[in-house]
Length: 87
Image (cartoon, rainbow, N blue to C red):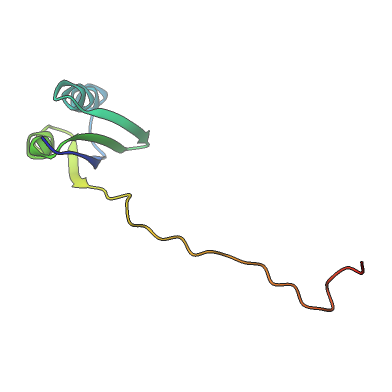
């Protein structure tokens, strides 16, 4: 059982009951809804169920999301000698 984060894209013509069925299926397979924003759902569930969720009516896309390994550049502010306040 490999629980991973997935992005689920709901199609534009999906009805409210279809969206609720998708959410129920994610929870029903032991998954967890992490975030819902518009027609995008971020959820964690066993990747073996990704195909079954993709087949649900109203689902346009199901894909894995990787939040690990992202490097954020360190930003440092440099002050010139002219801009430094007098001590």
